[in-house]
Image 1 (cartoon, rainbow, N blue to C red):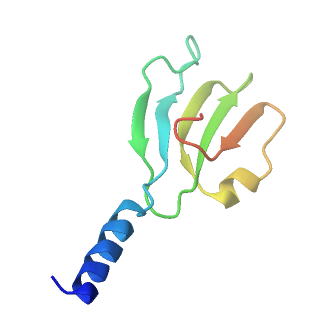
Image 2: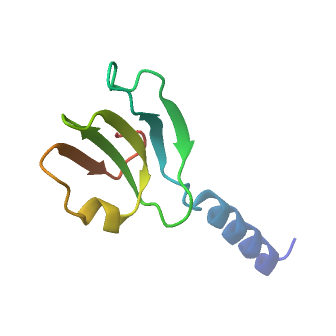
Length: 94
């Protein structure tokens, strides 16, 4: 194998190792007045453009909990006082 070929193979291997993996977030949607908290949470890989995980808890008069992938605009948006929202950007942080 020539020196140029070895260099090319090495670069390709390094490139394959450095490919960024998609963010993974907890996922559930529980809109239930009697039991508003998620109890069956799944892991989901976020699609392109979703760079945050979000957890939304709704307090009376609304009720429920949502955990899923989100984008920066959604995380920056204002919410009403009865809604508690938390965004983060590491795997399964919500």
